[in-house]
Length: 257
Image 1 (cartoon, rainbow, N blue to C red):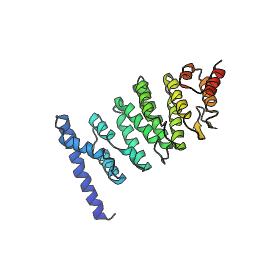
Image 2: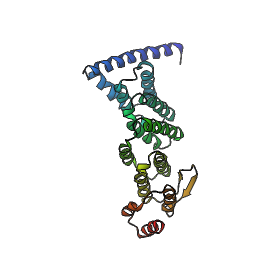
Image 3: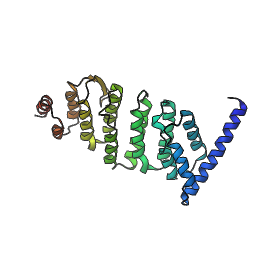
Image 4: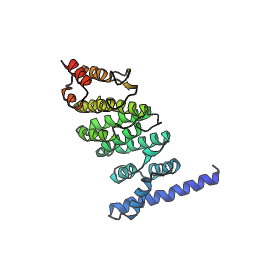
């Protein structure tokens, strides 16, 4: 980029940044027009990574009023999870978490977005897990009674029909990662994992709660998860209702007796 191109980009950012601030202020006064147009731009699923990054830079540089919930709602409008750009996704999520620390009521929305990011195909999810960890810690210290809403978000994202083994693996890892912090929904999370595993026939690896990686296929998945479950001293009887195969039912009963 030449010096002149750089200057032109700065001028463009200034103009859009001022427009953004004016739109937010008008929205506070009940004038929706400009704000709605901005949101429509952010929701554009065909937005390129370059354009998305430009918007993000403008938000970070010019929108400094962190106590304004309109900012959070605007940022959450991004169709960012359709982007294959992992660097952009990480930048977006970090910025969103920083803003959310001032607006804890949006933390469940952020966790849902993080899970979507973790489930992106061809995306290195290690940084996403770090951010999931940050988001959960923030939620535990601020709004610890929202696990029911979190469970609903996970249920909506559960990839029962997906054939990608990496996609399925990340979903399982997400469930177990989150279950470490929310013991009251561990039953339900395990239920989701078992239901999914009954519908696939691929070998996957899953991050066990002691940070060991276990390899298993659909023949012994129930045993592996029940062992994890038993260490936590939880009840799994209700899972029998959802398991229709006789062999699986026998295995569950054997372990539970």
